[in-house]
Structures are given as structure tokens and as C-alpha cells.
Amino acid sequence: MLEQFEVFMKSLNRKRMVRVYLPNNYESTNKNYPVLYMHDGQNLFKDEDATYGMSWRISDYLDNSNLEIIVVGIDSNDEGYKRLDEYSPWVSTSIKEFFPEIKEDVGGEGKEYVEFIVQQLKPMIDRKYRTKVEETAMAGSSMGGLISTYAACMYPKVFKRVASVSSAYWFSQQEIEQLLKQSDLSALEAFYLDIGTNESAEEIEREHDIQSSAKVYEIVKDKVKNCTFEIIEGAAHNEKAWRERVGHIFSYLYK
Image 1 (cartoon, rainbow, N blue to C red):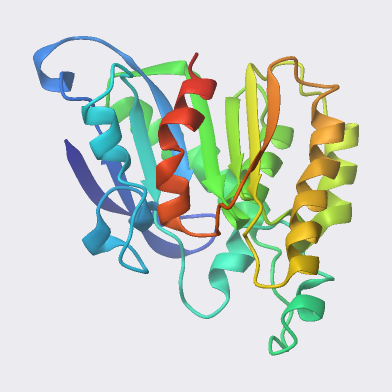
Image 2 (image 1 turned 45 degrees about the horizontal axis):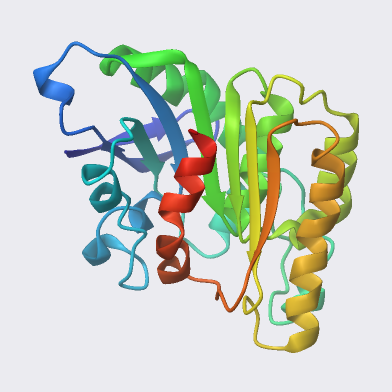
């Protein structure tokens, strides 16, 4: 079952659509459920809502699995480069190297975006639905992986399970590595990290993507006991590729 509603984000002074997946038995039981927060919410459930016409189809997967969780998808801001702004707490020093057509500074609103989730959205979800308040996770792809990793560093006792899929760590590589090094991640129960071998058009860029995530994994693996880094052969950088490994990602997070 899917519900959606608009929320005013106080920390960013803008509105946003939130989509909530509820387990099939939600209305017929009194059970409480773990909650997984995910970014790019419009791309998670239905192809017709997705930016590029293909979604993760997470609701289809969960409807046919034994995993009972609530998934909260927060739509991305697709106005200009606002998605990049919200999904990184730092202004990128490397974005213009990879995308010379971008002339303006991007990034820098990630702190406020995560504060919205922790201070406003999570309390709202916990009031509105039957949740297991202490069993909260976060997952995202590309820039969503970067902001999920940042959230784990800043709120490790809130987001105890994290999946960072096809992560765009290169956007703020030095900053996220430094933050990870100084963060206490001992409260995390699971950290899933992956990258495809066909994420970028050029071979040199593909190798850069892999090394970018590998550097993060080298830090995280010494801080989180239940941690994995997987290189997915042939996987591209899109929702179809992420859809194909939804079951694997969720199984690792909730095993």
C-alpha cells in the first residue's frame, strides 16, 4: 500500500512530496515496523512516477517478500542543480572537473536536508504510523549514497543500517573521507556499499568510480563490523540496474 503527502521542509523553506510504502498486513495487524528512509522518492515505487520512466519497483519486491518494513521515499528536488545542493553538505570542488558545463557552485544544503529528516520528518512518521522508533535505516543511490553516508556519520544512533548504492563520493571525496575518519560508527549494525563496473561512459571514469567507493570502504570496514563492498559486474548507473539488486541490498540490511 502506498500513501503520499506533501511536507513543508522548515530547514530549507520549501515543499516536498513524501511517498510511504506500508506492508500488506499493515491494516490487519497491530504490529510495529522498522522504517527505511530513501532519497529520490519518485524513482522508488512506480515506473510512471519515475524521472526516466523506470523505478526500483520496491513496492513490488516487498509485496512478494517476507520482509515487513515501512519505506519512506523523499522526492528529490529537480529544480536546476538543487538535487545536488541537497544531497551534499559541502560545496563540491570537483564537480566542474567532471562537468565543465556547470559554472555555478553546487552542494552545501545537505546538513539542512538531513536535519529535516531527523528533526521533522522522522517524528512525523513515528506519530502517523506504527513504527519501531529505534529501528531506522537509510539508503540511497548516486548522490543519495553520499548523503546517506553523511547521515550515518552525523546520526549513527538514528540510522543504524545504511545502504550506499553506486555512490557519487567523488562529488566531495576528501570531505566525506575526513568525516568518516573522525566519526564513531560503532552504533551501526550494517553498512552496504556497492558500485557497478559500467557506471560511466569512459573506462578511466569507471575505474575512478570504483576507486572512489573503495577508499570509503577502507575506512568504514574498520569502524562497522557488518560491512560489505561489492563490485557489480556490468552494472550501469540507473534505476533498472538498482532494481535488479534490490533484493540483495535489502537482504543484507535486514539479515
